[in-house]
Length: 288
Image 1: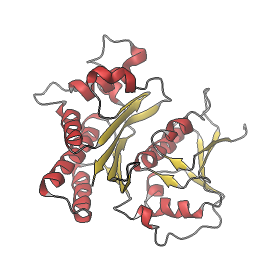
Image 2: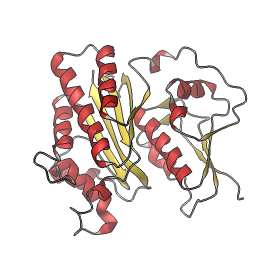
Image 3: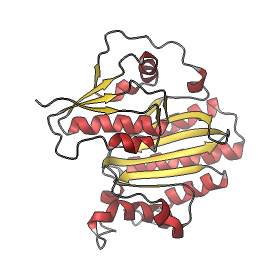
Image 4: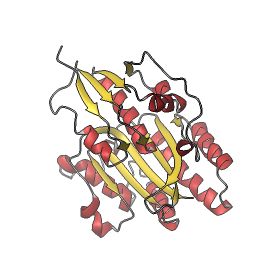
């Protein structure tokens, strides 16, 4: 068996640095290899990266890869992952984990709102997520309703379009302008948007289907179903987030779009030819 391939996570693990982390994967067939996901340097992780990391672990396992997560001496981060329930949703192995620190009180940076991996397998799971947020946040009725609509619309897409289940992860923290933001990631490891919309995209170049699917969903509300009102979920969600001056990004397959942008600016912010990830991942920053 060849030597293990080690992917090292950066100090700050967010939606941008995740792409660099993913690019460390070998370009050739990795079946039957051992891949070590090194979190020894990690100090800060966002909900988006937490769920993408979880999906990556499970995706590599599906390729007959032996996946090991190595925290080395980073026992603080190991305790966070346990507290968040991360290991309840993956069979990835813990490497060098003989001396483990039991998860006690987390530091305030991770207790601002809530950090927890929550499954989306049925409609009741969506109601549970919304209920937890309403218990923890002192929002106005209008803002609370808008936030519930955002979570419900995106989560419902997982149940109806992904042919899989998904996850939600949430936390609150300050952004670069020192605004308090609620960071939400809603992600799945399903078929992805280009496969879901393949019948509607049959006339497009297959090499660019991920980017085209994101564009069509993000700006035109295209849906795999023809029922009246279908495809409005992402459009409605984008409008609510823009109303509250929040941010939203969407990644599926090998493409990603982010920011509050006009359709004519799409080529400036649509990233294509990324490393493949299964499913669709939606990242939302909602002002508190």
